[in-house]
Image 1 (spheres, rainbow, N blue to C red):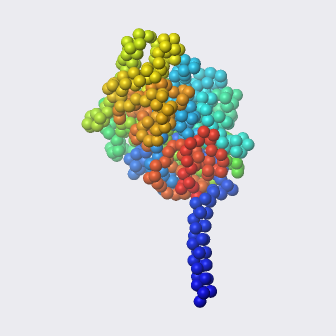
Image 2 (cartoon, rainbow, N blue to C red):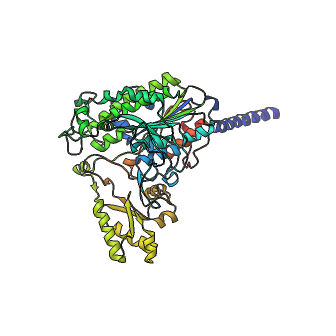
Amino acid sequence: MKNKLLFAVLVIIGVFSGMSQKKITDSNTPVNLHSTPKLVVGVVVDQMRYDYITRFYARFGEGGFKRLVTQGFNCKNNHFNYVPTYTGPGHASVYTGTTPQNHGIISNNWYNKFEEKMVYCAGDDSVAPVGTESVAGKMSPHRMKTTSIADQNRLHTQMKGKTIGVSLKDRGAILPAGHTANAAYWFKGSKEGNWITSSYYVDQLPAWVQKFNDAKKVDAYMKPWNTLFDISTYTESGSDQNAYERGFKGKETATFPYDLKKLGKTNGGYDILKSTPFGNSLTADFAIAAIDGEDLGRDAITDFLTVSFSSTDYVGHNFGVNSKEIEDTYLRLDKDLKRLFEALDAKVGKGAYTLFLTADHGAVHVPAYLQSVKIPAGYFDMKSFQTAVKTFVKEMYKVDGLIKNISNNQLFFDYKVLQENAISIADLERALAHFVLQQKEIEKVYTRSQLEGTSYSEGIAHRIQKGYNQKRSGDIVFVFDPATIVYSHTGSTHGSGLTYDTHAPLFFYGNGVRKGSTTMETKITDIAPTIAALLGISFPNGATGEVLSFILE
């Protein structure tokens, strides 16, 4: 009897031990390093709000966005965890796994306190243009302070894994591809209509790029832009003719159709394509050509292809998030994504690549429209504000030039003038913070002392701190009321730390990725560490995000 009882106890212990061991093993089992993808494809859709997925879902085909929803992993509550939400910081944060606080891309353009001038996030006078004679080719990632996930893959593979970046916008191609990319390519419109790069990467365009440019496929897109489907079926947007859209020069109303060849004469030549869905189509064409031209995903060494679809941003800025034009742009992008996915299936192999899709920021509804439906919104007069600030400081201290620059919702002090006049920085901070907070449509104000001396763990203060770079940012940061912008009364924009700007889609798909979804909050900075874990490589050197282990097989 005792032996039977002992045996039963041992069996029970063994079962629970096995269950416990299985639980531990399951939660700690690494991704099989022998089945890593041949190619990682990072897709950023510029200015894509998360609700575009649900808003247009019924009209999407089966092979584009729906493929990601039904066969990939959908992070439904994904947010940017910093301010400002602009294109440069967005692309840098996606691929570095950290925020402007560390990677240093604090805006698209910012005031450089040491050079005493505005600088561009990808501008580099030390390099030469390739594929053009324009200054549009003088670009590189030299202002980004940390590595990208693509850089880490290059290091891990002894520089054998390739990296190619593609985007209409230079910053959308350059920052994701990182410092070690084989090449990044962006579009030069105007009278050229070509894909270009800089001497940071190559001395001359590869034959496949030159062949693509010579074919002038771009000309096929200089055609009338009408809705893909009958406009009467576009029920997820406002009326075609309204007061909240800018449109194109040379056309009285911002209504379909648009004769792009004709309108191009007064709207920057080939640049007009950027503000139409055909800019995305051209980007997809070039990205697919890059797969063949660079032999991406053709061997066991993982390559990277970064693709940013920029036209969604241009269309949003021009026509607004509630426009017929934005609806048509996403329905057409859905088809371009299908083409890209099918090309990856055919050229790399279904199941042989891993892909993620996200955005670089969201966008606000046109404030004038919000006002028309009784939602608080507004426009901030920055010019009057700048005058008021400088007048206040001069009257208080009887000194000119204390404020060196006002940009990106920040005030920069002139420390030399402060020192020469024995003015306390702390006193100026307090006085200005109080004055700025009294201004209409400004909701919050933070000083350098607060942002450097206090650790904020939540809310807008936390997001501002994550976007604040000690060396590059200003001395006073101010925050607008919700849906208040510095912009024209037509079209949408972005930049805030509010949900309409921070809530972005995030899908993972393909090799090493589970199918499913979550409403648990994820951060844009989690993408790079998650891809690093999937590949079994080191995180980007400044990464602060976390691995989303629940999406990994």
